[in-house]
Image (cartoon, rainbow, N blue to C red; front, side, top):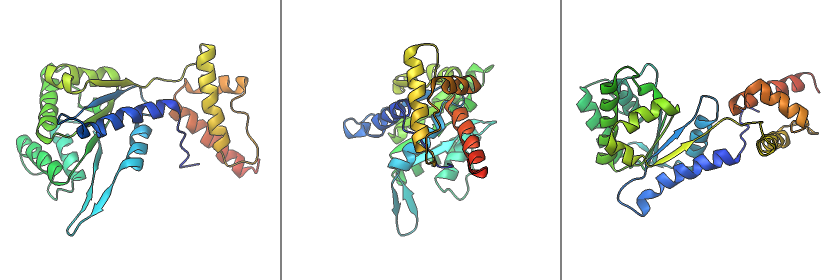
Length: 253
């Protein structure tokens, strides 16, 4: 149950965007970058980590272990300084706290090239937004523009829509870099088509559960109850079903 994942069409669409960025350097010298947005709980982080699980390659070299995908979370509260330190930690810099902002940015650029990084995935990108400080947002956008230009590596950013767009769109040059945009929304239940999509998801989950018989999760009345309880957020759907499955196992139902 802990590792249960469902390959639904919305997850596949996000993977297509990431893959387009990942392979963009095969046909161009300019990397494609993407911004994946949506509210908390729609499955952005799951899409990110399942892509890493599927495509990350690790090489064992004489003095180090090298990987092709750099994946990090922008921790809150975030600043450019703390963000660069997080990247340096992921790149195995022994002294990520040392140096000025410029020194750290140059170290990040140097390590990305030396480590042979092919793709950079950043989660919770909106934590870098300073709502009341447009100049701070522009400084963040300039830093990302420099990272993309100097490394030549595709970036895919995951975050809340409004805050993430504020950073990317305030800099025309960075905005052009992030030409690919994908918004992941909640599931809906307000039309026959949306109801069918949600019921298909529940049926897919149902058939993956470790029980001898189906639990009829996709039955219209049960599906509606699950939707009302979760507002169509897939993270909440999985939480309810995991808790119910745990209860069923403990009660031998």
